[in-house]
Amino acid sequence: MLNIILFGPPGAGKGTQSDRLIKKYNLVHFSTGDILRGEIKKQSKLGLEAKKNIDKGELVPDSVVISMISEKIDENKTAKGFIFDGFPRTTPQAEALDKLLAEKGTEINVMLALEVEKDELVKRLLNRGKDSGRTDDQDISIIENRIKVYLSETAPLTEYYARQGKFYGVEGIGTVDEIFEKLTFVTDKF
Ligand code: B4P
Image (tube, rainbow, N blue to C red; front, side, top):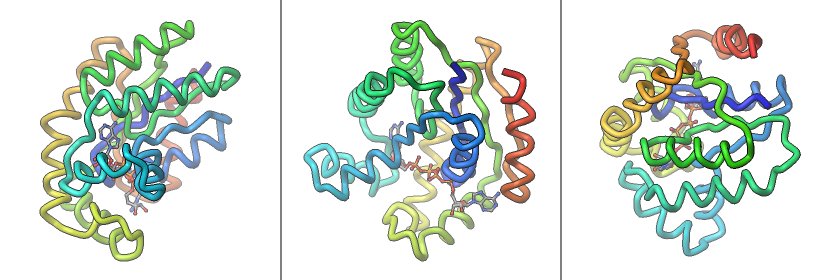
């Protein structure tokens, strides 16, 4: 199996590059952001609770996203591999993911971390907010809070995977094709 974590701050290009990686390697895609937005659209209890966090630029509680991912892994027993986009975002999420994959006799092969500076992130997200309808992309103070939460709660995970020898940093500036080429230079080795 090929199991990839696509990592990076909000707006780094995770969703954009995931779409391409899935096609190239025939992987199952798990985007916790997409799953949560689907729940909000359905107005489920989970979605309505998650919306409160998302609209403030905060993370949704670990227990909620961990059980979502656990269910999705169970539903995809014959997958060739998984791409985790926007998950894990905290140390408890990373520990839970290691455990879930170990139970299936597999593990994360690589964390690909897209590196983009703050001004560019804000520009991309505000730009997407013009037509995406995403409430978390339309307000600069919410975007700044998402970046702040990323730096304090999520960025330390690079150390977690570096200790396992699985961390690869990739510059996320340039065209979508150029960045994809840099990512697949790493993933083609697995
Ligand atoms: P996500 O949906 O994961 O959203 P994101 O961080 O904004 O990244 P996304 O993948 O959508 O954007 P991308 O960088 O591709 O999370 C949303 C919220 O859900 C979180 O804030 C949190 O509240 C909650 N959540 C999700 N997962 C969670 C978890 N595990 N735990 C707790 N809470 C969780 O693209 C951004 C823009 O840049 C796009 O418009 C794109 O077109 C553009 N772009 C991409 N590549 C570009 C390039 N090379 N050049 C120029 N623009 C580019």
